[in-house]
Length: 408
Image 1 (cartoon, helix red, strand yellow):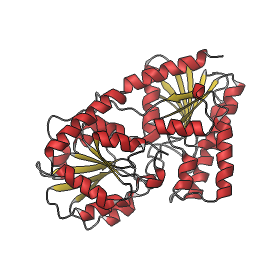
Image 2: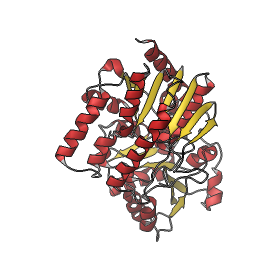
Image 3: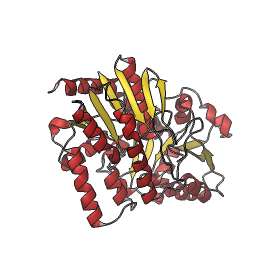
Image 4: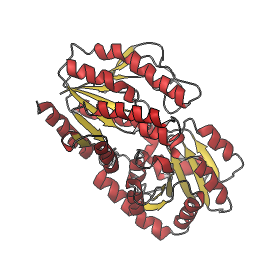
C-alpha cells in the first residue's frame, strides 16, 4: 500500500500522538509499505520547536524507511485557547503545499489524526481528488475537550463547531479511535459501524517489562532501596489535573517511606514545581529518552494517573499502556463507570477525579500493602499483554487498511 500520514505531531516527540504515529509509520514501512508523512517540526510537549529543526521552512527527510515532509509552524510561547487555535491553523495552512506535493505519488490511503480537526478539510479534498481512501483517526475529541475544559466557551459556538465536526466525520471512509467509549461517542456523532474501526494505543510489551532488579533511577535520584516510589510520567498539560499531584504530595509529606517522582514536560510543569517547591518528598525529572522507558516506568511501585473529571472518556490516556506493561499498579482519577475507571479497578485503584484526599488514601493503601501491590502488578502485566501488544494491534490495523483499500 501507499499510505500518506498527515498530522501535526510525529517522532521524535516522545509522548502522545507523535510517539504513536512514529511507531506506526516505522512498523508499516518495515512491512514493505510505502509511507510518506506530512507533519510539523517537533515542538511538543515543551511548546518550542526542538533544536536542530526550523519552524519557518519546509524540509524533507528519510526516516526508518519513510519519507517525512515537515512544514512551517507557529508555536506560541504561552498557550491560551485562542493561541492554540492559531497554532493549529498555522499548520493546517502551511501543510497544504506539502500535501499537494504528493499529487503525482497518488496514495491509496490518506490517514489524518485528530487533533487537529483543522487538517481534515484538506485531507478529505486531496483524498477525493486522487481517488484515495480518507481515514480519520481520533486520539482526542479536541472540540468536546476544549469546551469541557473551558478553553472555548459559548453554546452557539459549540453547536456550530459540533455541526461542522459531524459534517466532516460523515465524509470519511473510515474513522478509528482508541477506546470503546470513544467509539460510542463517534457513533453519537453520526458514524455508522461499517466505517468505524478500533485502533487502541499500544505498548512494546517486549521492551517495557517488569524489572527483575531495582531501577537504576533509584540510585541516580538518591532514593532509598526500601522506599515506595509513586511515579507520574507523561505530558504536563491542562487535561491531566496536575494540581492534584501537589495536593496529594502535601497530604502525604509525613510518610517517611513514600517518595514521589514527577517526570515530564509541558505547559503545566512550572506551576506544579512551584506548588511542590517546599516538599522534600517530591523529585522532578525531564522527559527521558525512549531507550530508558523501561527503567523509568520500572522505578515506580505505584503509577499515578490523575485525570480531570470534565475530560472523562473524551480522552483515553496513552500513558496507561506503558504503566500496565511495566507490571505496576495504577491509581487513577476516574469514575467507575468510565472505561479508564474499569481498567484501573482491575489493575489498581480508581478514585473520584479531582479528589486529592481519595487519591492520597489510595496511594497510602498500596504503599502499606506489598502483597496487594504484587497481586495488582500481575494483573496489570497480564492486561497489557492481552490488550496492548504493539505487533498484534498494528497487524490488525494493517488488515483494516487493506480491507479499506479493497472496498470500492
